[in-house]
Image (cartoon, rainbow, N blue to C red; front, side, top):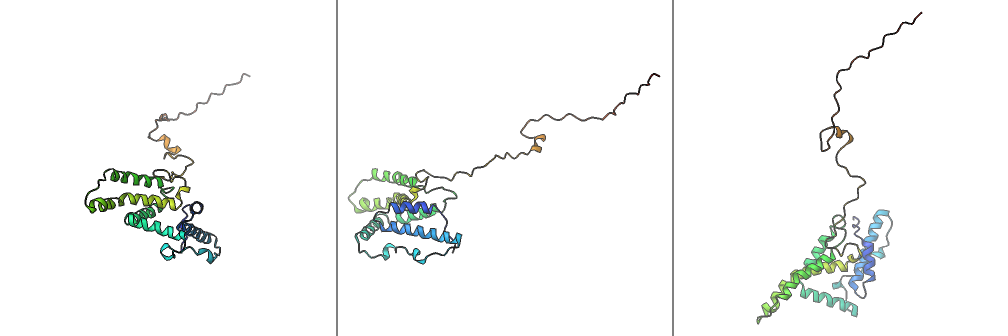
Length: 224
């Protein structure tokens, strides 16, 4: 089993733990991130993990509704499933795809971009809505057309629930990863290339010509 990739798990886990309130599904998310961090640390350090730490809260459908907190979670999920049966899975799929781009292409998850995309795609639907006498045009047609803004809204909400607001760049439109810093700029020219024809104007060296022998001065006779 390979170690899961580190996508700011520690920062996101802290944010989720601080903002989970009474939502059990958020507590489950924090525990899943903590388990991924322990698996990755065990792979890197060869340390033995405690099997008890890998136990997380069961999925919503596997948890009995015995407390008000569990009932609230179930009510939220039921309303979302009725209002966006297509937009919810589509938004989750978009979220999964965008997360795979982090941190190689994106430095964070674009929460603001998806939230504003839901506003842009949903506002014309609200402004152009005109109730009719038939049930299909009054309820069914707006419900079908509303799956598009619901998709963008679900993608943005998943970014918030997964703790990406704690990562810098989540409020940008599309937080691209900045290029790696370079110590020097390579123009592709070497020192020996400056004497050859190129983009830099250089003065040609004068021709050497024929070498002339050195003339020695005649020895003068000394007067006796």
